[in-house]
Image (cartoon, rainbow, N blue to C red; front, side):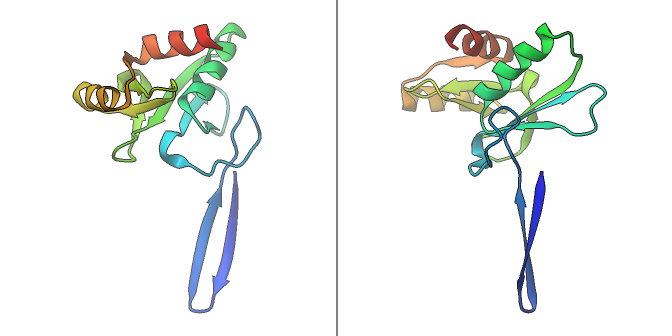
Length: 130
């Protein structure tokens, strides 16, 4: 994670730059960000998408890592959710979006031609399709 500070005269704008833990690329779209907090690590691992995070999660568990928490960014409100309490909806291309309420996920999925998943099913679905 990096911080860029730009001087705009009387206004100092702070631009936060963070990188996907799997790809190393800068995250530019924060509407689908997911995070994994691994026990014993000082920093939370950030991912550009739930799919990327869930793939990493499967690998971390296979490596015997203890996971403290998994977070997902709510697509509609932008709030950080505990992923195991969130609902996920896919669009027609299979990209996942997180929601606090099942009804929100159902509306999104219906409008996008996708499906609704709880955390367990979403992680299983992602690993099965990768």
